[in-house]
Image 1: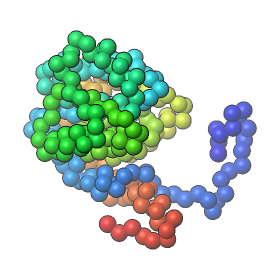
Image 2 (image 1 turned 30 degrees about the vertical axis):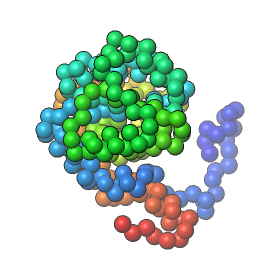
Image 3 (image 1 turned 90 degrees about the vertical axis):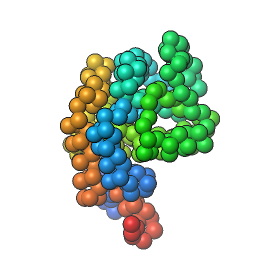
Amino acid sequence: MRGFDDKGKVLKPVPQDAIHFTGHHVDHELVENIEVDCGDRLDRMKAKEPRRFLVTMGGAGAQRELFKAIIEHAIPLIEKDKIALFINLGDHKDNWTWLQEQLVQHKELINTHFTWEDTKQFTDGIRKKSAHGLHIFLFDNTFHAVYASNYLMRVMDVMITKPSELAFYPIPKIFNARVGGHEMWGAIRGAEIGDSTVETRTIPQTLQAIDLLTEADDLLTMYCDCIVKNKSIGIYDGAYKSVELATGKKFNR
């Protein structure tokens, strides 16, 4: 329980019978399809298709300077068809108001997806086909807002995110600067198991990582190889094992 007291008091530890090692908690469809999705990523890479980047943006409006820099850096790459950029704003309309102001000179690039039905249809449509341009996702409820990122992950090449909850998902990742101090461990973990970059603590470092993962193939190949290996040793099985603990029934694929 270290760090859970606001005055720094050393707390009693969690009882040994109340803590279990499980692994990363990940949606079933993401774990089940790791080999297929990583294979698709490598096929797109070999075919020289635009590299697909997913950016997730929280509701607090934190790190807007970073997001602005990422978008400005990405626009010339989108126009050259080197990358396709996908931005999930969740259910935060204020971020959309802000983003429209930033993109006022590039309205022709924007493709909006504001319903779950449209998001699902679009995502399914690019699973085996090329994707181009700049795509913005915004929803009117939290469930669709959150699950859109999960659904999009399967058809993305790289996700750009702070190293918090999404740090543990099986997709190649660029970790931008953390917001909370505890998020440091998400970046360390991701780098250790080989499915993501180290934490890019500055905007120039984040942009450099985007360029590296756009131009070079070795990093994406390594991340995909590591994700497949990690699945084989159960790293992403945390949700399955938690259900087993709760029900006493083993999950069989």
